[in-house]
Amino acid sequence: MKLIYFDIPGKAEAIRLCAAVGGVQLDDVRISREKFHEMRDSGELPFGQVPALDVGDGRILAQSSAILRYVATLGGLHPTDPLEAAHVDAVAAAEEDFFAGISVSRYGARFGFEMSDEYRAQVAAAPHPHLEARLISTGQSLFWIHLNNAALAGPSDHAFCRHSRTSAKRYCSLRTASAPCPVVGVLSSLCGWSGS
Image 1: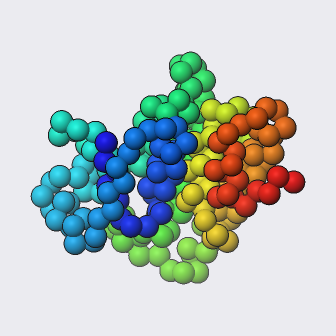
Image 2: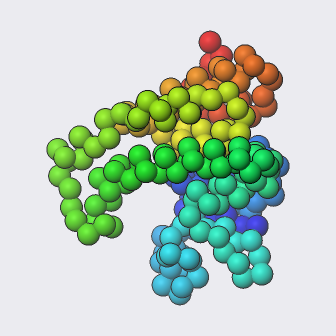
């Protein structure tokens, strides 16, 4: 399989890390902006966006959340129990709802309007407490969601990014206390958790 994205962390970093943790063989193809425009204009990319996952035989999977879930499933990081998997998917969907305002504020032109810096700064002050409660679950099944959040958050001081790092640190602490978990090492390096 080939993961197609730019030579930056961005939306692909969690996918790369998830593949590494899950032992999923992935060819990390990093393209230039010029190559992206060429692929987009030729219709090669579903929805005209990256990341995209070329799974072979002319089949290309699009949308970072779908790719991440697919790779997590292949790597044994997504629940096999349908109900548990649905609970994880519900958390992922709730986060996408929450993040929609941030996406619109950052990429207004993509949605057909421009937004002032003053208004943009007011978007999404804090997540819903119910979402936070779900995010600090001790279940290992939420690992790939925390991995995605922490990879996207980086060092940003945005409220959602601070929340993502805090939730990931709590998750690392709870997972370490409840049972040894090999995935915690990868996640802790992203969110800055030191084991205390």
